[in-house]
Length: 221
Image (cartoon, rainbow, N blue to C red; front, side, top):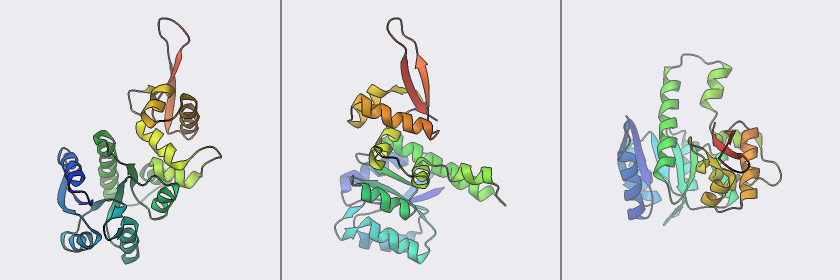
């Protein structure tokens, strides 16, 4: 059972996130902290495995807590659930080694997929006696880490890229559909999708309809 602490200053949003987690097998919410002070106390007492952390809190930034945890060598992981849309926030999250960076409002399916991947990676890592490159690539191959390691070309914004990546599903979607979900033009969405294809984070395919040209659709890789 993976034990989770939710750090969120809005009680209503915290309750939504708690209910999301409760719908998933293999996870337990130990508590909810509404401030950094509460979070520090609950982490010290409850010893969670994973913290769902907001960036903006009444008594400071979540990044402050994250830096403290890293400096103390705390044995826990962090997923940011935040409304912070500045590219600098994503860069700081990468530097501090967060598991994922999820923009609010949090969609259940997005959080579910992240937690499931986290659970699988944790189980796989615990089962390893030693490692080879294939095992390393499998465990460290999250989209956020791949983007951080590879850098971004001109015209590709990290925050927008994460939003496009989050909008992709296994069912597949066109550039127009992705653009509508993310709030960008079809042309912009296609540019980001083709970048993800090049990074092997998305797979394209042609869908033939009854009339007109075939449509290029994209799926999670």
